[in-house]
Image (cartoon, rainbow over the protein chains, first blue to last red):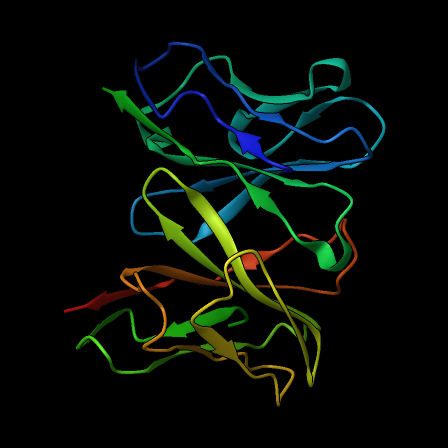
Length: 114
Length: 114
């Protein structure tokens, strides 16, 4: 079955530390990839997305992600986190499904200590 | 103020009762979606609608029903047949059902069945 895995369920970092959140999917065809963020008490919102072209995509708030097709991965990175990055992060993949259906990973809760 | 609204924010129901969750969007989007969010499981698709008067089952449709009589509205009914209805429910919409269209999310409704 098609699935999306986020192996880090909880991450705790100090401010200014670097961040990398893993995302892997199980599908051999063409994919569209998304990272969403859910700040405490706020709507789920899009951080960045990849459809084609340069596999390194930049999003809002200094986040970036790299698509590595051979590894079926789309890891999220940020060089220096801030306390305001405390949130839950979700990777989502459209795996050739009709109707723009997304399969979400289980989410990673990031806590940044000031 | 454009966006997606969901009401109510919190909902309590007794076991065995049906309950309907509201989702309205004024973004003029054709496609709408319902997801269920449970801790550690990410978001799972319940139903989606690509256009008015049409909808399709998602991964976990059992015990739920929807209607799409108007473009801007996509209510979800949680029936008494849903075995574990307590969850956070998120509604989303996208301009169309193209797999490159970003999904935009509402604030969610937290349903607790007592």
